[in-house]
Length: 258
Image (cartoon, rainbow, N blue to C red; front, top):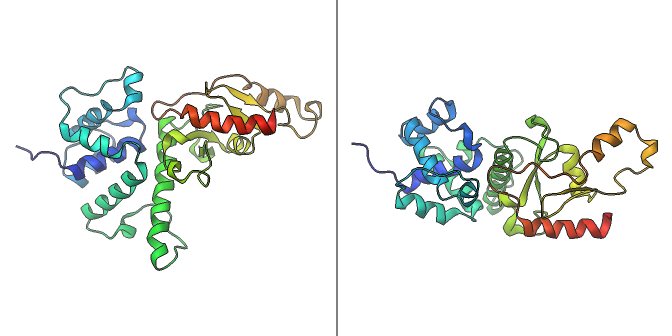
C-alpha cells in the first residue's frame, strides 16, 4: 500500500496546478509523468490530486467545475496555507523541488539567473525572479495562452501584465488576480493608459490612442483597434482579474485618457 501524501508533495502539485492550464493535466502528458517520478507518485495519482485541489478553488466552483469527492484534509490545509500567499508558494515549492532533486536551489531552477548580485542581495534577487516566473506562467496558463483582448495564442507574443503596477503595490506583485494576459501591443497600451478595462471587463479604447487623426492612419489599422472598443475581455479559467484592482487602474485611465 502506498504511503500517504505528504505536505511537501502536495505543495509541489499545487505549484504545478497554478502554472499549467487546468485541462492539460492527464496521465499521458510528459510533464505529469516527470512530476510523478520526481515526487514518487504515479501520473494517475497526480491527476487525482489536481482534482482534489480544484475542489477548493473558488473560481473553479463558480464555473461549476467540481473537484474529486472525499478530498483529504491535508489538501485543504495546503490550499489554505498558500491561497493568497503566492510568493511563498513559489519559493517553498522551488526549494522542495531542489531538495527532491538533491540539488542546490540555483542549480535546480530553470529560469534565467544571469547577472545575479553577490552577498545578501543574491537570494533576494533569486526570489524575485522565481516570483516573476510564477506570475507570468500562472497568468498565461489561466487564460489558456490567449490574449484576453484579441485571442492571439502565440506565446512569443504574450505577456503577463500587472493591473496595478508591481512597483506600486509590492504585496500584489505575485498575485495572479492582479494579472492580465495581453499581447505585446495591448500590454504597452494598457500600461500607458491608451486602453482601459472596466471592473465589468469592458474594453475602452482611449480617444488619443492614435497620435494623429484616425483618417491619417491606415483604415485597416483603425478598424482593427476600434473593433475591440466596448467589447468584453476573454475571461480566464482561473484567477479572474480582481475587480477592485481593475477599478483602481481604470480610474487612472479615465483621468488621463477619456
